[in-house]
Image 1 (cartoon, protein in one colour):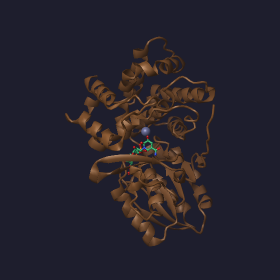
Image 2 (cartoon, rainbow, N blue to C red):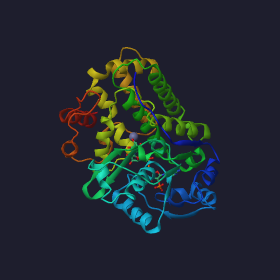
Image 3 (tube, rainbow, N blue to C red):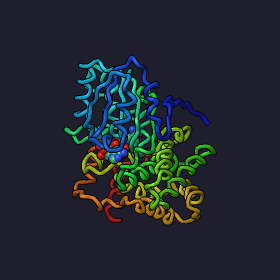
Image 4 (cartoon, rainbow, N blue to C red):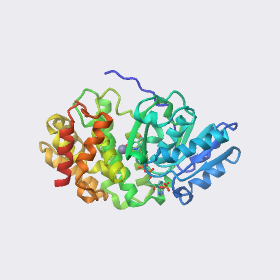
Length: 379
Ligand code: NZQ
Ligand code: ZN
């Protein structure tokens, strides 16, 4: 067992915690408040941010789209530079947060910020960033991952940098009241797949990781089975907590990981606009089926400890599909408007991004990607 782990993001969890911003952001900072298409104005977050920042100098940038683009965020970079902003406050879901991680780094970089996404440059420094989370799903609020798209080339790429950790994140579940059923279902599925990409690989000797992953899984299964309670604070605060824990990368300590579902899903979003979680739900079950020889020991452990199912791989996979479908998230690619070029598009993107051997064993090849996508289409 060997790993290094340092997650510096402070978590302020609970109703009313937003007022902590007043103390946590130094008074001498000039703050840029960044948000998306306007949901923050309906869920109370914007008004509370304005109140909390009453002692600060601040300005705002709205209009970050779901699956944030460099095209939009580069406009924010210009604003930061022109106004001498030196602190970023992201108010929203994963898209606003990721857009701001990019913004914080690109604002202190002389070249084209896309360099971070295509790997030609590493982030060396970034403006300080804090988050007010309004949508539980990605875990971006306290991790070092950034996912940003480039509209002009239909690309969705990601990078890791320890400069991207937010300084702190406010997790107030009362802002979740305005989320649609679709967004709540998406959040549950995204967290489920985050746990899977860190857990559903090879058996290991790490009692803490496996035990914690299974606890988080069981939490999500409980929330799915009590879907009719999704409008309660109990349901939403538990979703928010689980989503956060599912991708603060604690589960990744010392284990091999398999991010193939995300890597395929990101291409589906880039080409066909599927919501992030929906792009995952149409891949994960079929990927497990295709890669069953490599995953069956861990799947058996998962099936037994999470669902109480033994010796039946297909029953376990179907149970995963049942969980996703029960919160309104389809598990077949044919639920979406895709065209006959889906395999070709994803394979070409994989070639140009160098994803030729992904997965925990490097065995998810282009040929496997084709089979996985075709399984989803045929399902
Ligand atoms: O734009 P606004 O008006 O804010 O509306 C958003 C958006 O339309 C809305 N929303 C957010 N909070 C709301 C709300 N609507 C009503 N009430 C509220 N309280 O929800 C819509 C979707 O928001 P978005 O931020 O796109 O969703 P999510 O949090 O799922 O983020 C998805 C993005 O994160 C990336 C995805 O690829 C995608 O680009 N990911 C980031 C990760 C990370 N950095 O760790 C990991 C993930 O695997 C993922 O790849
Ligand atoms: Zn995800």
